[in-house]
Length: 556
Image (cartoon, rainbow, N blue to C red; front, side, top):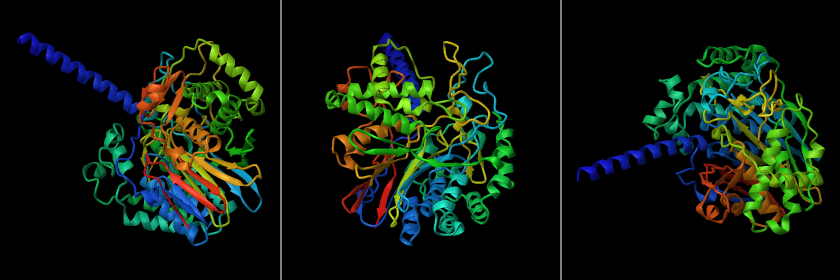
């Protein structure tokens, strides 16, 4: 009897230890779990004639809707939406982060991109993410604190975008967000989930305002410092980059336990870049447009679609081949892509079908031995929203502070990003060759954000799509485009079908149904995409938001 009790206790202890280990890995792989509160189904999709808004949270969707209804453009609505998301979804994006915008201007028939990616400080160090022994730091050792904080760029980018394409006054589009912030709000499900699982924030700020969400999630939440910041920037945007707020940002970064090197000049001199979108017409005559480097998303998705078209006949029911295509484009991403101001990248070659097919066939024959250093960097936090106004202008926007709650550093009502952990932690690869996406002063880390706009064979707007999800964004958007552009599935099905990803030979799937049909080992995970799709059908716009998150659709 005594032996049985000892055996039982030993078995129970082993199960608990194993479960604790599994939970730790699970948390690192998936920082935000799927929404538990079900959004009204009528707000998850809809068909509209004049304008439409899809965002990650209904508070933001409502504010964007109101601005478009009163005659504002997508540039007017984008400012208010992002500032609202920074308040109600602070774990995902905000004033302390960065953004990529893809915009179709109906009047000129041109598609442009705004690069609002954070920059490394001008005195950044290559070895900042290495231990003294030269090995890469553990992910959260690099994330938490100031060392991974890049220049916050979202606000300057929004201001530049609004100045180019907005019709309402800057202060007018911020006013409803100030009122909303002043009145407080009931915390959304995703914010409650993020706060409850957060391990680092409360060790830095034991008396953080977010503790009230932990103790009383059903009570109205107020972020008074955020309201004050909104009031300041509504009068003078530049006060964020040159005034007291800028001084506070630099002070928090430099005085943290893991200090960074950001300085006032990094903030003052940062300039977002407006440029022509990267576009490519596929064999099926759809033209895909999105941001170019330092975002890798558009390039990788186009590469995957080119290969899909080449192998289309054998791909119809072959998930294993789809996964291998993703595995391949992720390998090109790691080997060849980086900030184009620091690395010469031949994009035309990388989007050439012959080049891709030849190298894909070689890739499949290799005996690959690779592994993921940091699971968290694969599935990090972010947000996405898509808009069409009554003038038929289109915006696809993805913004982020990287990890959930970013660096965890907090000032003036917002969190600062940890985007510099999107650099490779190592300086050279195993062969001693310099890694292209290594840390360098003044450089922008590689991103996977993929806010896309797609045109049909008559060069008319057809569709916009994007998602949060770190490096998994590429897989999420690819999956939805295969379903819509090639398999003729409706957008709700394209969004809500199970997600999958293969990266560095590691396969993650969302459901057992996928796990059962894959020939290789696959790990089941909550692959919490936040896909937002708007598609033109005759004279109407059909829109849908991902059921996995709190996103909603509103329009007229």
